[in-house]
Length: 157
Image 1 (cartoon, one colour):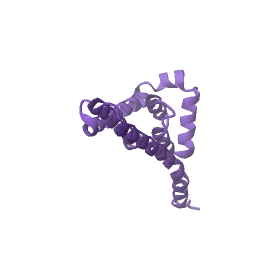
Image 2 (cartoon, one colour):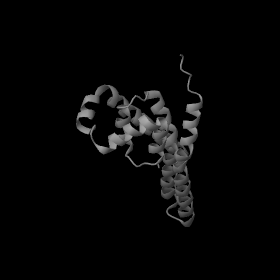
Image 3 (cartoon, one colour):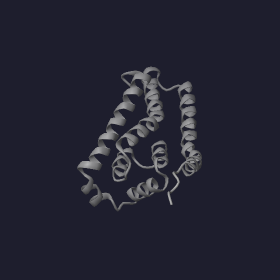
Image 4 (cartoon, one colour):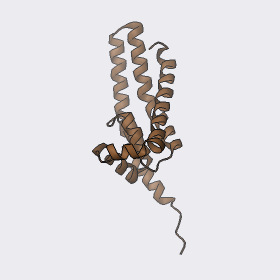
């Protein structure tokens, strides 16, 4: 809010991405045994692990765009999967961007101009766009799987 919608949004996305990457690294290399021991059997972790094994990065895109699971829990859970830090960080950056900018923009507008009908209309449009964006992974998933199956290397006999 202090920096406005654009700069504030950029800083929010950078901060959220750094936080997710740090949690991922901690979960993968520092606190892995602790996380597995205390949280590994929880349904949230089980669903994320199964989703990654079944759908790969599509599942990460889906869980970031549709915040069913809190971001922090996601970061630790994905650390327990074979996903690389680079892939996790890049996908997290891109998929956390829309919501971060919308929330920051709306907060800056409220501070600057107060609540107005124009703001409520913008908030409604932003909410609809976010809802439509959450459908994207589901739409792309079959196409990505088809592409993956078409380009798998042939086994040598």
